[in-house]
Length: 319
Image (tube, rainbow, N blue to C red; front, side, top):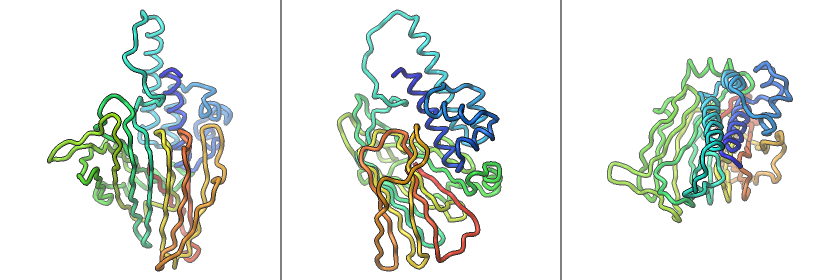
């Protein structure tokens, strides 16, 4: 696969990701963009390559904080490089890239996410065992935080977060590696979307992940339920060997949980295995695991509280 083909695949995954975040079907997104539904399906499946017009309309319809537009720029740059390379003299390649669109050399050996809800605040703790399979030290790791209170209504959702933006203060994000605090830098800071580089360094020194090494990183943050919501989606963006999700709620709310799986070539379908339920000390927890998930697959867990009337459908996602 050429770099342009990889970039086109990543663009398609990014668009599908944001369509899922906004709770839109392909038909609904096509209507918002002014395209035929089959065209959206062809782009997401890779049968059609993205165009500038498509990227602009998708970005506008989905309010993705320029994430979709960024992927389009990456695709265009890769396509231009491929065209230049096709006419340039052949030269030996120094090293082959891992078959992942970003060229990253990271593999996630174990990805564990735990969400706890106390009736007002959602708190998420993430643990990832990363392995560097490349030839250069890894010095940073990208994470995403995005919220959407009104899925399927992007204009209403955007208006809500313009009035009530997600803030760094409420997130209180912190991360560690090998017991060391990790510095972090904001890459994108939008009202309902954050991208953050976790750095393998702090004020006392640096601790890069060298080739052949594996290391656990951990990070956590919290958001009130007026911005979080009642679903949690995991998007597989790096080769992953084991994925685990745990959800814990007050048993008094009588929570129930279900889930769906979506790939680049198929619409949402029920998870192949059901979340496992357990109750202890007033907490009802649900756990779900899978091994070797396919790249760009999205797993979405949803819940409702049968003991609490639902006045709004609130949604939330982190990857």
